[in-house]
Amino acid sequence: MRSFFCALAFLTRIPVPGGLDYGADAFRKSLFFFPLVGAVLGALFAGSWFFLGKFFPPVIIAALLLMISVLLTGGLHLDGLMDTVDGVYGGRTREEKLAIMKDVHAGSFGVIGVVLVLLLKFSVYTQISRGFLPYLIAAPVLGRQALVWLQVLFPYARKNGLGKLFDANGSVSLFAATTGMTLVILFLLLRLSGLILFLITGVFILLLGGCLTRLLGGLTGDTYGASCELTEIIVLLAAFLLSC
Image (cartoon, rainbow, N blue to C red; front, side, top):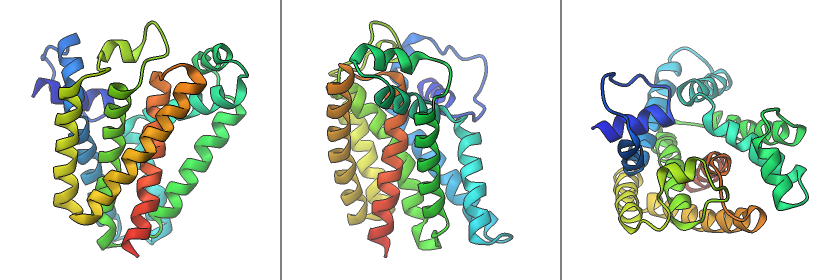
């Protein structure tokens, strides 16, 4: 449970028990629980939609869901998205891109990227019905699974940082365990549609990870966050088509 609480503390702002040893070992093992944390977030989103639907129209519910999402995650992945877009579009060389991504100031490219992603999420949220709720849970599950796949499959671009702390590159056991967990969750939620979303996410992550590796020489903590946000958008859009 210690590693699960470590994952929960890292990926969300949900309070966790104090007095536990959240050292380097627990931090590394926390990756095994990333999809489960995604399921917790998804369940909270679905519960929030169900509760808010008793009082508000769809447009207001969509705005409140966005706010709840940011409050629960602390905007962690949105921050990574902003830095990644700034670096990729603002730098010419690999070194310039990485340097821009470390800059604490938000650039115009990053702001535009975050606004577009939030606009897409808002648009999908306005169309949610009760039958869409399993997809709403699946999106953060696959978003957090994407974080694991990227760390296992692609090299880290910097000498120090988040990827070095997790030390997950090439871990077959981590890949197998989290992939299996995600498949079970998706099948329980959506049966065949869940497997389709799984395949779509896998292809997307391979393409995105390969593209970012060519541009940056590897991945960074910021690109992990960006990939999580982009994966959620891809899953939500695909889910909308599957649920029509």
